[in-house]
Image 1 (cartoon, one colour):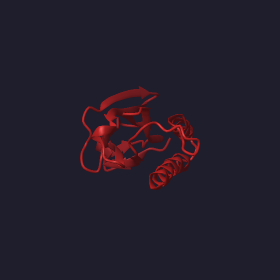
Image 2: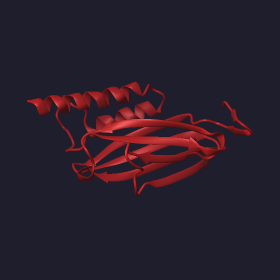
Image 3: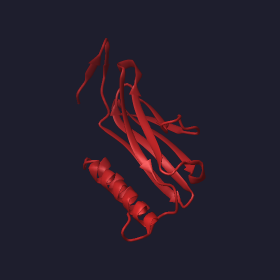
Image 4: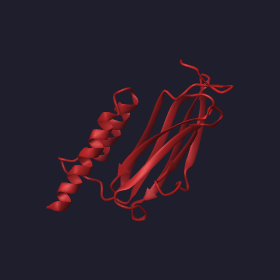
Length: 155
């Protein structure tokens, strides 16, 4: 474990930080931001480029002297632009430390077309990414989905 110093404060940065979009049905999406291994307790915020999201629930657990935090919200596709950008920011205020993740979301029905990743594929990619595999896999799947949707829209 690496301990960092910011001014007179010591902190441990997160060991795992992820932003997941989970399509629950054709009309809604769960946006979940999670971080593990930080100290002191991190603050997670979910936002779009325009504003902080309302109705976000937060969970914080202390595990072996370090914190795991989750921020999540369920949103209606009808309330979102297409595409929508979600941003999760992790802050450790006493340490003046902040990092962020961004993801692009395309509202609409859950896809079952073989050429495009399904919601289950996306969840699997996110789970694999959270176990240490590069987040490039998740990013590539998201870009593939966006490209496939754009190509289908042109037809």
